[in-house]
Length: 436
Image (tube, rainbow, N blue to C red; front, side, top):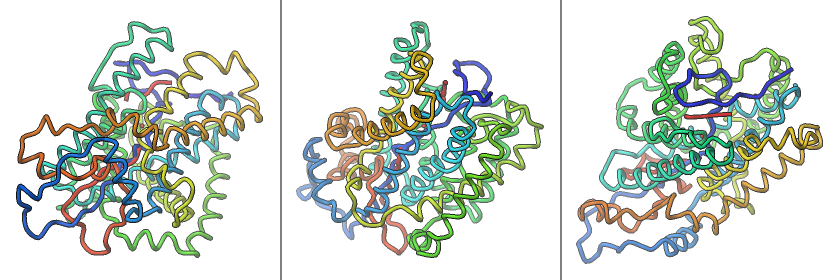
């Protein structure tokens, strides 16, 4: 009998089945690359801050400058994140569902993180970039950390569940991880061999079982190589994975990965895919992390490349939804956790049948699609893209005025130039206190 991950309480030792979600999609936050002005603008030429509605309208008016490929990738990734979360309460006893869950978990968060790193290449910690980091990542983290804690107290009938700003709850881990990764970007950009160093750090992280849950440091360390890969990527790399031959190779790769996942599903600990525990926490020898870290990294990167190969390059009906993935990422968790905390699956056993799992999958995909729409994004702008110009000094406000908070704060999918990255920095996609 297969078991879905159990609930994780604060201050308990990490569990093997601890779940990592972004999505993300994370929002997955991507940052726009904006050309550096040849001369500093005069005070009279400085644009004034735009209200939220005007900012959204400006984003829409500039849609022709966005690269639809990355918006499409963010939307498809966040749908996979939501579907995988919805399978958790119903996959117990189903080998096929567990295998599919394992397959999706291998690449959906790595894909988000790679894209996030790619659009973070030009981050240099300028005052305007730091402002967008606070408004696009720190504020959403604080708001939804509180919101999920209150929701757990009510929905799980646990009024004493404690608040914590240092122990990320459920999906919010991705925001705090992105904050740390983004701040470290200048360091990784200056190293000669950043990826091998990041892989060593990830492997060593798996050896430190007692690392604690503050800031969900295990995930920050173990997912770090994917962010570094994104920093190293260039536009031509994405053109390579979109070639026809790569798309054809992606089909047998996914088929083979699915077969392997089905074969090992009864024996594989899901904690390896969550990257939130040390090797010994997964009842494995201490040295197992040194082997699993590079093996899972290679598998995740291969499946990420295969996923990106099949992302549409043209504008589609869901391209516009890519700009709202932060909302879909942060809000769909309330729906998924309602299934768990309200014991809806035991009350309605048909949800755990094959037909019920299909209905549940379609329902969550439709729900996260609605949550990514422009009206929802506008309604949540106060929490996901707030105007914090009042909190910064005048000179710092000027350096970032006139740019939408989504551009560098959390991910406009603008097409980067083929040359060296500009000095303007972007942010990403869009999942600790991860509990089941």
